[in-house]
Length: 193
Image 1 (spheres, rainbow, N blue to C red):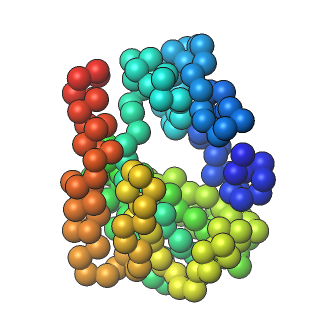
Image 2 (cartoon, one colour):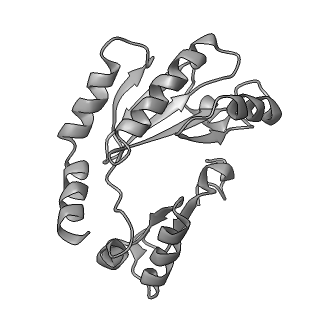
């Protein structure tokens, strides 16, 4: 719905699979066939699966549950500091793979071809989204790059600022270690996987 209404670039959802019935009240209702979809997602290995709460146990049979901290990274190829933050965030994504998902957002006054060339030359682990109309950037009134927002599993921004700030890594580790959603995911993994 966010992509269809233009609030989120469709490219951000390319590796996302959502299953369920959306009720008129906004609730996501259980559907049949989630196990088959979960098996397909697990086989492809690169999609995020979103399921209704009542289908979670079924999906957990074959997929990893969510429960990850999210870092949204706003960057640009023309910003010298983005070249400094890319290796830092790449290393953090690899180190905290189970507990963290980094999503890079770019497109600020630059073409898709420019971004693609930069990404080809600078292979990184985090997922990236090209915001060609700068909708996200304008919506949050971004005025400095690089800028990251650290979101807990409940969607609350726990910290935002420059990832080169001293103590940034400790902030992320603390957010991971204190987050009840991460703890619940870890417990589910121990019990069901």
